[in-house]
Length: 401
Ligand code: NIG
Ligand code: FE
Image (cartoon, rainbow, N blue to C red; front, side, top):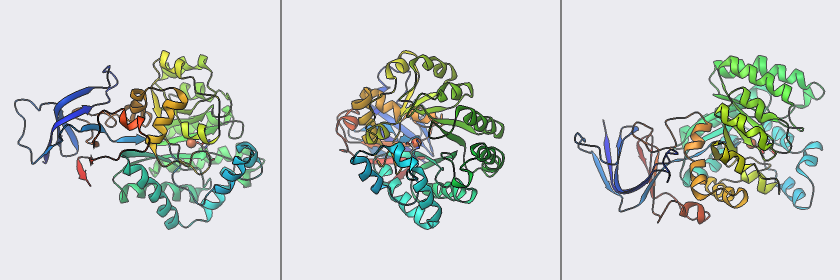
């Protein structure tokens, strides 16, 4: 048993039930092995600490959680970025065979070692700014072998870096060429071959679908949800990113843990999310890169107490951003979140979007994923874009330099 005492520390526990996100000043934080032993004094029976650190008034926050990324892929889409800058639409590039299809070609031909090297570089950037958990989706392989390679590379990220990796199977991202006129045939393959294999082999813990006019219909999405449910996998959805396809209400019917993007979500559909306990994941990076003008219905989400998470959506097309904190700031500027909402969105509610109740908050008994920050107040992290790196951190209770 190893006990660490962080003394003289300010804490923002990110407990959403506290009005101020759970601020405690000039207090103590105790770690025992991989868990938080106590927030504040450890009481009369406090153990003798093996390590004692004087935080000198620095702030302890939970490690950040990037709950929606597509970090593993081959190639680059810088050429398409240029085209978009000169006015071509994302949807038109996709229709002409670029977009996700371009990255599928590049990912299928990339050596796994090369995929790992580039994904490590991107993940390292996130880790450097205090991210201790990431979600990574497949979806640029579409065929069995490449999807499994992507998920395997994602797992490797957690071996090389101090980060917990949650994996999501996004086979229904776009239609592979060989199924060009047979979308339902591809959905058969996703539901009957891939999902059972993913579940049995524990290659991912969740399933996601791109439900959109340029992706899959609500009926096809529902078939994937049914297969995910029978296989015991969690459900997530790319919903209402470019149009109101009624994906979010469908996801709510299947008790999805999150619906992501949701710029075109009808405010009347928000109560269904609240009832299902579904997290709304806001992705301001994609909004920014696509020069979108339609904002997610934040007031309705607030009004119905739907938890809002914020994620980077890192991907080569719509959000090539390797900074979760930048996205948190963007969620405030673009979508009108408060600094406190943005911080909850990359901690407690991001954990909820990944069904990780032991992460994202500093409470006794939960995972000791903790960053110490040399800041005046936590809002500094949102206010000053790209200004801070953690002073030090513990990941799973282990001190990491
Ligand atoms: O989250 N919307 C679908 N998937 C990604 C974009 C993928 C791409 O363009 O490569 C997203 O925005
Ligand atoms: Fe995405």
